[in-house]
Amino acid sequence: MAEDRTPQDADKYIVRFPEGMRERLKNLAKANNRTLNAEIIARLQASFTEPAQGVDRDVAIASSTAEAMLKALDRANEHGKLLLKKVEAIEARLIQPEGTSLFKAGTPTVQQSGGVEGLTRRK
Image 1 (spheres, rainbow, N blue to C red):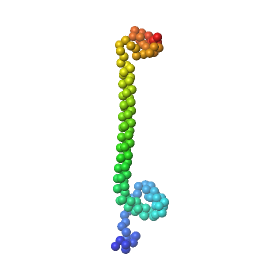
Image 2: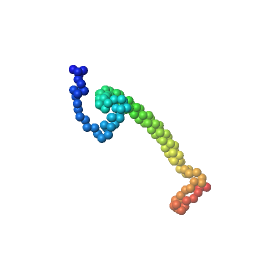
Image 3: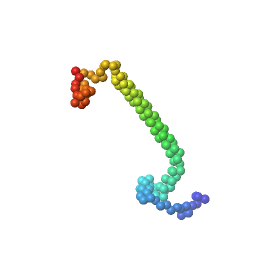
Image 4: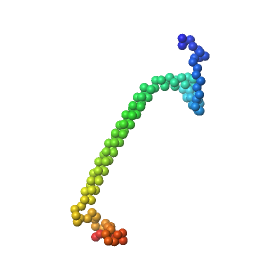
């Protein structure tokens, strides 16, 4: 029976820790008022019960991320609508009836024959 087992009779397994892990576990064991062995066993036991919690957490993170992305998409859509309105307003101003100027008086213009040297101010 398991109740009759002594620590000497318990299953044993030699583990090779990556560098620094043993010291880290030792510090955590001390903080949790456990032996190094008890800390390792507690962490192993917790790992068998955590997947359900981990899945719930992952679902919550995915849901939160999807919600944030939808909000960002809505904001981008609103910005797109505003930009479209501005472009339409600019296009409406650029499409002028023949014979009217797009420029106000005093705006620098380039004369066709003079190139850059022909830059003058309209009156």
